[in-house]
Amino acid sequence: MVEQISVFIDNRPGRLAELCNIIGGNGVDIRALQLVEAGEFGLVRMITDNNEKAMALLKDAGMSFRKGEVLGVLMEDKPGSLGLISSILSDASINIEYAYAFITKIEKKAILILKVNDLKKAIEVLKLKGVSILENI
Amino acid sequence: MHKTVEEIRKSQGKLLVKNVKYSWDNIPYYKQKMKEAGVKPEDIKGLDDISKIPFLSKADLRHHYPYGLIATPLDRVVRFHSSSGTTGIPTVVPYTKKDIENWAELNKRCLETVGATNKDIVQVSYGYGLFTGGLGLHYGAERLGAAVIPASSGNTMRQIKILKDMKTTTLACTPSYALMLSELMKANDVKIETLSLKRGVFGAESWSENMRKRIEKGLGLEAFDIYGLTELCGPGVGIECSEHNGLHTWSDHFIVETIDSEGNKTDVDGEGKGELVFTTLQREAMPVLRYRTKDLSSITWEECACGLLHPRIGRITGRSDDMLIVRGVNVFPSQIEEVLMELKGVGDHYQIIVDRDILDCLMVKVEVTNEIFSDSISELITLEKEIKKRLFEMLSLSVDVELVEPGQIPRPEGKAKRVVDLRKDM
Image 1: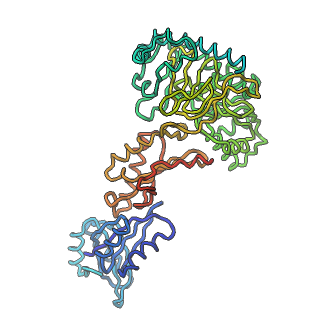
Image 2 (image 1 turned 180 degrees about the vertical axis):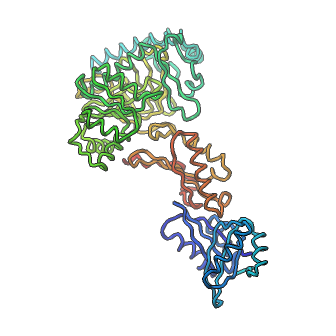
Image 3 (image 1 turned 120 degrees about the vertical axis):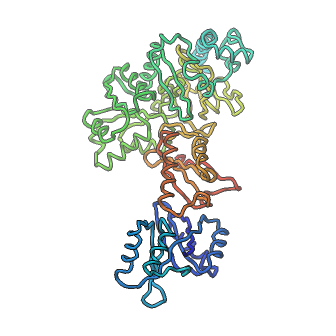
């Protein structure tokens, strides 16, 4: 399981830059990030190398945020890997609420971040199929 | 003071004396109020004694909902109208046959004042129903002998077709609806040359000179402001003449006064500035004595170039309470707060913004605090929709709800400005 921070932001120019400056400008590295928009507002989900510090910085900036747990999966960076993982979850009737993926410094490996409706069960079925679950990224 | 004006005010005094006696005899609550104030009908000998009469407020009317203040037996009542009643209890206003006739007469006079005759085709695009706008203008135009098109509000494309095909000369609706008609005409390339409009009678909302210019240009007509309140009868209380310098209020039906925030009379010999207070002089079913409108304006008896001797009230410049009128609906910020407070964590930081694009729009910004923040977009959208739904249930008005970051609502001197009305500049 991986810790993720979700932040509420207004959907307007410059807002993401400001947010990143709050985090990055204080020496916290954003390892992965997803930005979603819903009309007038948006949501930033991110995984950093120092979540405690990131949250303290967000709190100081007066922003609304939440820490949550998501599923981090290390997968092969090749065609079909994402489909395979999705199938394992769907076979166990687990729903994916959202997901984002990125490649890593490890050769031929990619990281998939998943938000599922049953985290415990998801870890179980994925482990059973030999998929490596990450504790941090 | 002008000799004739003096005579008019004298006859107002006579009508007042009669009306006070009538109210005392027929409305127990009025009698009780006057007794509490230590006033008897015989103390009211003329216009100068009006300040002895206690005020009547909207709360008084609500408190006696629905039949508590009717002066006649119910079998003499032939009609009811009602205010929008967004604060929960509506204000119900009864009319006898004579009240309806008088009301029609007042609206006929208003139409005459703006130059309409029996040759005109009057399209009434105010809502028909409990709201007084539609039927008030309808009866007035009919009494004038004009041809009335009871279009009611809505279905704007059809309204434009009627304007064009039936050669409407006189349009009656809210100013914002007039703007909407003109915008839609522009969008559909309907030229004003294809219309026969000469004039428009626009009321039930406050509007500015700039808006007048836009409406006049957009529809190719002369725009007139009309004033009225459900509590007094509806539209027809006051009308602008071609001088466009204030609204004449019919002196044989209404006494208008001004007061300050403490309730002290501010008009001297009928002239002054402050909150408008009306007394009806001829109403049978529900006379009102010194009704506080909360509308801020001024009164003058100065001679008008149009020749009418009825005193003029100025444009309504604001309200003495915080009520907003949005698309003709009365909205109190406290109602919005009440709705927001029902949802945990929502009501602490919000802002109400009223603007006018074509129609008035009401927007509520709600800061997303940590308490209500969710990682799920769909949960946030559900919250947005829930707030919208609840506001609609409370106000019968669709409200735009926007979720914003904490701190986005300015808090000058630490106190958030809850209401921003951007329509003032229009």
